[in-house]
Amino acid sequence: MKPVIEVKNLSKWYGNVLGLSDVTLQIEPGIIGLLGPNGAGKSTFLKLIAGLIKPKIGTVHIKGQKVRNNYSLFNEIGFCPEQDSFYEELTGMEFLLKLLSLFPFSPSEARARAEQALEIVELTKEKDRVIKAYSRGMRQRLKFAQAIAHDPEILVLDEPLSGLDPLGRRKLIRLIKEYRKIGKTIIVSSHILPEIEAMTQTIILIHQGKVFAQGDIHYIRDLIDTHPHIIAIKCDKPRLLAEKFIFKNYVLNVKFSPSHDSLLVETNNRDKFFSLLPSLFVENKIEVKEITSPDDNLQAVFDYLVGK
Amino acid sequence: MTSKNKKPLAFYLDSVGKAFSFFFFLGKKVNRTKIFILISFLPVVIAAIIKCIQYFQKNYWLEDLSVFSNIIVFFYLQFLILILALFFGTSVCSEETEGKTLTYLNTRPVPKSAIMVGKYSAYTLLIILMVNIGVILAFMILNISHLLDFSRYKILFRDMGVLTLGLICYTAFFTFIGTFLKKSILFGLIFSFGWENVIQYFPGSTQRFTIVHYLKSLLPQPARGRFSFLLFRLEPSSPGAAIMMLLLIAVVFLGLACLVFSQKEYILED
Image 1 (spheres, rainbow over the protein chains, first blue to last red):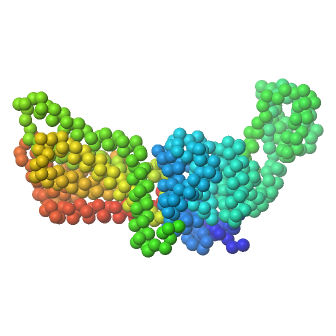
Image 2: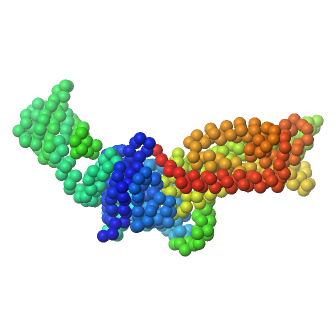
Image 3: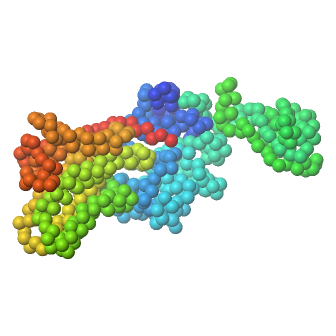
């Protein structure tokens, strides 16, 4: 399959701060998940792809054409920014209509497209409310609507699921997957692995401005599964619980808190560990107050993977 | 799609028109415009108060046209058009970068310079309307008993023309400033009430480095009076040269604004 987006030796830095370093990629139609902790360079990469910022070194080509200042290319690109910014005095409908008016559509066609986009993101009822009265989730959906309203071939979505409630997330994920079915190219970023996992199997792992890995999501899933996780359990019988864990070979370490009301368990198989927990609680009549995972985030996983 | 195969110039003008329509619509809705409409109508209130005083105190006399000229010069020329041009001109670019809405504009299939020209035109037209409606109302109130004296309208149209040229010119200048300076308002205030007010009184050709010099060159030398110092001109340029210079300044600075806006990389900080 011919790549839609080609990136060669792409580097970007802001003063002394590295944004992206020597990235070379080819992106084909389908959904590509861009995964990395906050500050990894995901937004920089997406902004470079959309021609919003200039690379210091390297090139970006979309369908064989350079992107920066190539305004005609934006007939085929929909960009959903991370920032929660709008023309607050406009209504949702006016916002879409005015942005669509900058495309070569007739007024009636622009209106029809705006109506359709609002319907897709389920904002039809709120279309005449001013944006400043919108909730965070509604604003997020409106941002998505402006990206899809002109029916672009390429969708660049920077953290599109942030601020959405679980139902909203599920709907948007379903929608993004539908776009893949009709042959669109979608690049979607997130710092939350399950979000990306729900949308695609193809991912680009980005960390400290570099592409850390690229390919099938199972690769990173396997790496994460073997990454030792620390889980804190606050309960009424921490020592009894510790006794039960000691005999499990996937438990590497158990520590008690100074207040003696909780324990920290280190495991290299999170799935097995969590599947065991409910039965242990029930059988031993342990009253659980809180279960947290202090390092259950992508940053910790990346730190582990890069050997920090 | 309706305009896919348009010629480059037609496409460009079409893009400017679209951006103009967008930002004229938006400009009418923002709170800043409402506040400045109120400010620009202050002279109308002052004119009404003066007229009331004239009506109730028969011994209080001021020639209506001289009061009108004083309002024009003192409030509009020396203050309001500068403030309006400063706030609307700098916001052409800065409200997009500070509000982080620039991303929406830069991901549309229109040239960046067309957006700049369209937005500049929309905001300039808004402030021209604001100022001139106030001027017309102030004129009507002060000349209420001479509304059929058509010779007086010549003065009204001349003053409206001068203010319109001033707005076009200052807004272009401040639009340019707003494209590359972060603290453009501060710079604009120093320029407006420092540079413009001081340099215009320098002898020789130095005074020609101010915009107000060319604007004042289009107004007649005032008769001696309380506010005549405000219109004092050292060595005025000829009206033709002044108009040409004002238009040239507007075109040059708008062109520079387009160039900077198209080439500069705006980093929208999170």
